[in-house]
Amino acid sequence: MVRSLKNPKKAKRKNKVSKKGEGSSLSDAVPSVPAKVWQPGVDKLEEGEELQCDPSAYNSLHAFHIGWPCLSFDVLQDSLVLVRTEFPHTVYCVAGTQRASWNSIGIFKLSNISRKRCDLVPKKTNTDGSDMESDSSDSDEDDEEDDGVSGTSVLQVFHDGSVNRIRAMPQNPHICASWADTGHVQVWDFSSHLNALAESDSEVSHGGSALSNQPPLVKFGRHKDEGYAIDWSRLVAGRLVSGDCKNNIHLWEPASGSTWNIDSNPFAGHTASIEDLQPSGESPATSIKVHKADVNVITWNRLASCMLASGSDVGTFSIRDLRLLKEGDSVVAHFEYHKHPITSIEWSPHEASTLAVSSADNQLTIWDLSLERDEEEETEFKAITKEQVNSPAALPPQLLFVHQGQKDLKELHWHSQIPGMIISTAADGFNILMPSNIETALPANGG
Image (tube, rainbow, N blue to C red; front, side, top):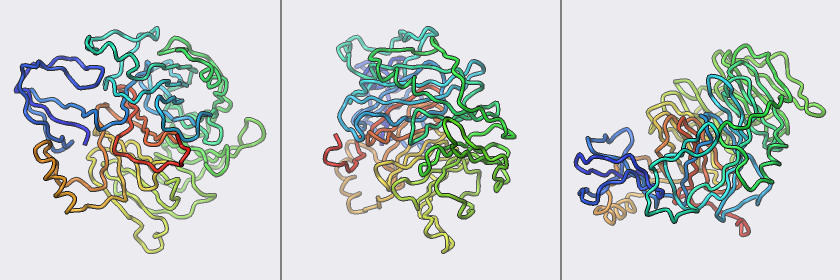
């Protein structure tokens, strides 16, 4: 587990976070009780108690903010090493804003992501893009100059309306599609922006200082309402599907050049809002009821194409093996750990049995379906750790990791080229995390 509990007996807390992320700083004179594992949804904080993060749980953990709230983003496949494990890392992403006006799409590059762990609270930015000074650094840690994400370069493009969701084409990551709250689906070419970021070793723009007015390649307005469901096919380059809140799905087929043939007659197999889409085959195969409540998100397993995971509006998520559909019950796993809506779910691109889930309960959890409870091993572990940690009971054995610290979590994505790396976005900024207990089988030359 990721969090520990400290009880300073009603001590007055300082609003201060160290660079090493040890949580709020307390006077050395204040006595503390032994730490115990925090169970979200079960344990409650008493007066004077606070949560602290255990840095040893992460190989890397960083927070960053790009100047405005972003509730949807995508990780871009880059031209760097196909599978890389050596620090520092560089990543490219595309993200969309959710503001009252002057919305934009940000194409950004994060450089020199270190193995170390830095502030859990990301620095805010001024309107001119510069970092705001705060008391979040301890003077005795100024020597940690390479801690964190040392380079953030952002290029922004004006977007008509808030960005409900944004996705990059897997085969050509510079081509991105966005859903706007105006009811339009737009397709963009960000090749020039990505080339500029790749050539830049310094900060290009941070926050809202540079905003280009590049037009989209396509602006489609035949949906009857706004929507959130959009995704590219991994089988056919350029094929796109978009679904709206009025139950309609439009299929986009690539044509010559930067154009698409969009079916004027939408698919209308559903009777309610389309919340998520994940293209898999050439045509619909079947219809199944997966949850008693609304289905918020779904994800295909790219390494085991028969496996489909879905998350509901009441916090449950299920895994189905579609090979078992003819037998009547395709559910192979069902979890009720989260008590608030599931906001994002995604299978690991490197381990077929692993997936990550985010919820409105401000938790990001990682699950390994290959794990089973071993009572003998569990007893031995508890005997070893009983004096150091108060282990929670009745947790699912498949629960591999719990990450907290973000407010109003909206979306997460694994990095397809950096095994074990997850990037998540919330109302208060982004986190990059690499849990230390996730081991991924890599090719011999994967570093």
